Image (cartoon, rainbow, N blue to C red):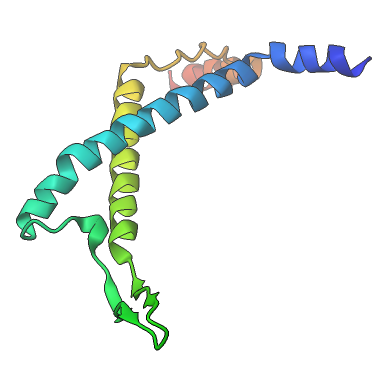
Length: 134
């Protein structure tokens, strides 16, 4: 079997198409949640913290200064605000995906299990038990 025919067989499987669809929808969904966080959640948090954007939060180790030659030396800071904003993005995405999956599982009907036929020896034992009870 040639490589091209193997590739066609691989692509023709339903799982690959489903996975590709999920990746595309997931990327679009991530953009929606990021817009929600950037446009609604973070401005509210910024308002509550006195107008400071969360992504601007940082701990300055060494402030910006001028060296002996007159060149500006950039500040050295730990920018933990960007990490917190990304963490909030992640938690919101995870929560919304949880809610979507929970709704999907609630809507999906459980598969009906086929009735299992009782083995013949069990039926005979039941008949013997019932006749002994009389």
